Image (cartoon, rainbow, N blue to C red; front, side):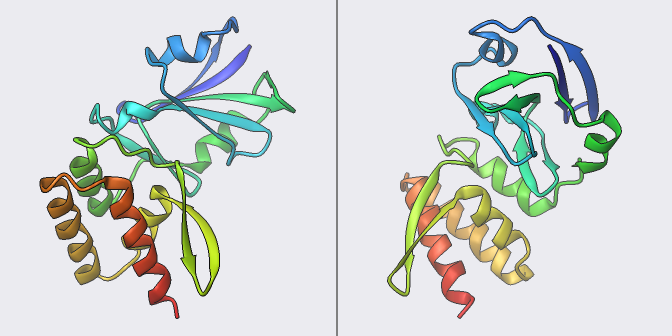
Length: 181
């Protein structure tokens, strides 16, 4: 099956052929902890959940923050198929320039078991909103310098006292949502 791999450390996009088996994705990453992202139309982006704790490089695929290597298959319903997006088009969506805020945050998160894409729920004005850590990082990344420093300082403190990282992200999400009023 025709697939693409993205290696942010080498800043390399490659087309590969894989013989699909039940464990192909897990074997590719040498891990059983895999995230499947569907932000690319008619494709699935597979990435290693443990990439943050392994200190892997981050990159953006469109607006999607991805840490570590990515493996991309086409998707037809629930079935993996050959990728259909042209390599040049996919390459145009990749951005290896990651801000210092993201780099510092990911370095701090390296000692946690946080998953960027696990959904959590927060409430604003009696409305339940589903968000994830990636959204929180995005919002604080576009904030002013002082707000970014506040986030990083509070994250450092939370990690030092071993506060639940997901709980911390939820509280930061509430702050971000309340700032939009």
